[in-house]
Figure 1 (spheres, rainbow, N blue to C red):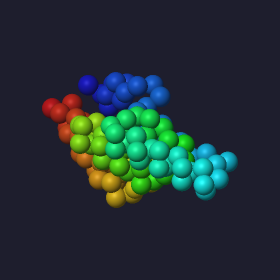
Figure 2 (cartoon, rainbow, N blue to C red):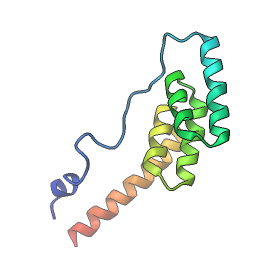
Figure 3 (cartoon, one colour):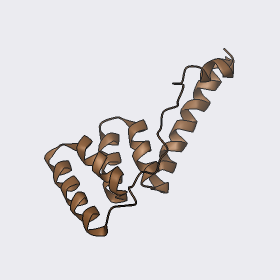
Figure 4 (cartoon, helix red, strand yellow):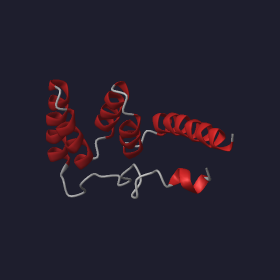
Length: 112
């Protein structure tokens, strides 16, 4: 199988939304209130609503916590998205290295 065929297996738009999020027209007070609500929701188990809040406010610590949760649930691409948007270069870099190793392994298998 050719390399091009391997990449044709990926979704057309890719895996990751690369927008950094964060509404710029929220006041610091509004962001703080929303972030508190997001933390409360996350602690109650509503991670998807908390995620939407953290992306809206650009709250990097919240996005990292969501990424950690995704990673613990074996959702590495979702975790990577959150780390990338946070941005947490260390955690996203670790996942990039793992993904690169997987792709190298796949390419190596295709050559055999």
